[in-house]
Structure formats: structure tokens, C-alpha cells
Image (cartoon, rainbow, N blue to C red; front, side):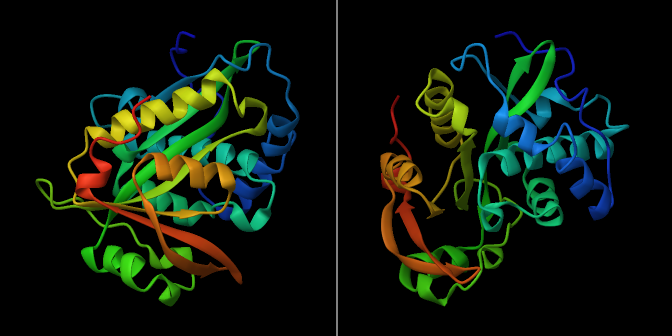
Length: 241
């Protein structure tokens, strides 16, 4: 499917949490996306912030904010349990730290581009990776897995922040393309190790395809979640699609 000239045309530039939550819960919000019927569930396309932000740099702050809100809308549409949905301020911080690690997936519905999923990863400190590998039970909230600025070269450790697409696209060409493109994005990113938190059987299957292994459990919002890690040798050439 060809990309729209401005796939974020219907995404507002909102700043306050109250405005953002109202928009997410409004008539064109996440519930509508969860109930949509798509004419061809195999058709979807992806964009990164580099592909949609204006050049030169003037206006980039507003463009990044709209990109984050589109990711947030996709996030809320993907997850039925409110405890699994991202907070707007946290997502803004994570994406602003490493925007090139995030890819938004969209579908066109009657000439309107609708966010339907996204993938994201960001650098983490070596100490955070070691904690997830050796003592994940000491992590009592996902917010402890804080983003770090990427350093030069292949000395970074990364956290697989999200792999998700709305339920209507599960098991379709779109969901397979999402994983394939994420594998390509990760393969082009030099790294020492990759970590992830898993909350579903589908997520478990995907991260294991990336060569990650379970290291234990963390706790988030009172729930136990699976911690996965992989060293560079296991993650560089895995998940061939």
C-alpha cells in the first residue's frame, strides 16, 4: 500500500495529559480502532519519524509529538488491559531519547490513515541489561528499564520496548511484515545485547525467534512478567523471515 503524503494528517499536536486522554477516549480514539473492519487485513504500511518529520529542523518538536501520539493511539488500541497501555509522558520520554528505534504501522480506511500497531526499541545501560539477565526479580516496574542515549559503535545494550498490532491484523501478512521489518531494523543496529519483557504467548514466540532466552520474572503493576535476554552473538543474525 502506498504511503500517504502526510500519514499523520489526522493526529493533533496535544500537550496536556487531560487533552491527550480525552482524545484517546474520544469518538475517533482507540475504541473505534479496536472495532474497525479493514477491507484487507494484509494491507498496512509503516513509517518512522525520519520519514515524516519536516526538514529543515523547524517544526520538529510538533512533528515528534504527533508521531508519539500516533504511537500512543496504536498502543491503546492494541492492548485490552489498561495496565498494559503506555502512559503518554513515559512514551514521550522514551521516543525522544531514541526516535529512530520506533516504527509506526498504519492502515488506510477511506483515505484516512489509522494507527494500527508499532514496534520500538531503545538503548539501556549495561547495568540494566545485567540486572535483567542476572536478577530480574529485583525489577518491580517496567519504568526501571530506563532509556539511555546511544553511544558510538557496537557497545550498546537495547531493550525491545514493544511489538504490537491490533487484533484484526493478528496472523495476517501485516503482522508477519511487522516482525520481518523489526528484524531488519534490529539487524542494522550494532549491539552487545538485547532484552525484552513478555506478557503474551505471541510475544514469547517472537522474542525467542530473535534468539532471546528467559532469564526469570519481573513484577509490574503487581503482575509477574517474563524477562528475556540475548547476547550479541545470539541476536545479530536471528529471526530470518
